[in-house]
Image (cartoon, rainbow, N blue to C red; front, side, top):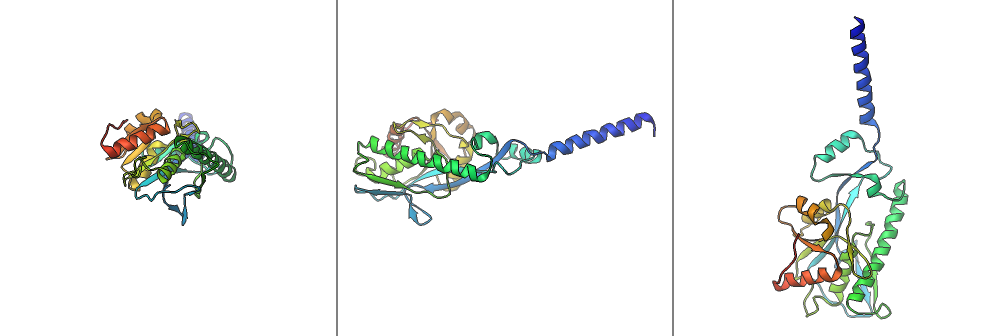
Length: 259
């Protein structure tokens, strides 16, 4: 073998070794998928999601479904072939690990963080809903239970569920009009609705579970429009009052905002 041939062989071997190293090295990304949805007006694992005492509640026939994503954990390695596959699939998303898990280096730490965020979100949802209805937390006690799902992104749907249970559409009917409505968005006690991550995957989860109406934070409309499932209607939201007004207009045949 000539010296040139040996040099080419060595270079090829080095390139192959680098490619193999790149393919096998763990990367700072997570793969996310459409996760579970849950009807906040119904039961979860045999227990009501919303329990209210100190006030009369209404029967509901429609559904308000919160949505979630699932993702590979911070201690689960993701490699280059996984990312390449995820980039080309509509039912997967490649996301930086720090955007999915901003706190925690392992599954247990992440679970504790998500549970704490869920509790804060639930407290804010109760405050926002009772504030919208001009009711006092001293008189009305609201308990929220939703097992195995964490994070703050169900806040708006919790608040809407509480309002539907207590007041419906405010004129004797239920807020949903008997429809299955899904959505996502954080909530503050003043009723402001904030953006969340993973909207395209959450829309797919909602579509899979029967929803054709999706409440989405207005700041994420452009991404939602670009990737919405066929037949899904998007309603932009910036406040809890805006979401209520849109749902009431949907029932009455009035003007409903759209992305």
